[in-house]
Length: 250
Image (cartoon, rainbow, N blue to C red; front, side, top):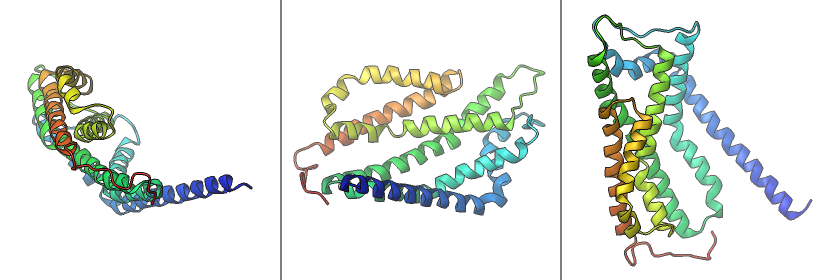
């Protein structure tokens, strides 16, 4: 067996081991959360339950939905809790192949990405959900019992969490693009009008079909884009992001 083949196999083995550790961490946290799966779903559904008309409730149309849906929520929470360890395993796998300056850049960006994604989810839960659900309850026709299936609510919540989590990643994306030389700060400022239009298009696609929900996604996206431009402009000033160790492996 050649040296290259041995190196490839060793890397694959390390990748397998780190994946197994990450999965095991999620599973262990999930097992700890299992007894409180129903409570976790109740917490997730709280914004909707508070907005439902008096006497309103959620329903389960699937025979096993009352069991599987809370389990899915518990698994999602377990993944979020174990995310730092999962990211550490990913970092430990790729770090040996990075230069010193790349390590200094990647680790803060990964940390910032994780925090911003969680902030986006929190924004959706604490701000977007109450506004959307109150609006939907106010426009429900008289005599119509506004209820939803717990599986469909979970799907809606996950889609919204992902949409807002990704939206809050905009500053990191902008900084990385500028840092890699893909686009300049001046160009980002130049295409600002197109980004604003695109933000409202994205808002229309990933939120319920009402103007308020669209604004709740589009406006933060535009603000975060501007924040990314400001930070990127500061970082590209001479001497702020000086490349150190180019050509020096670790």
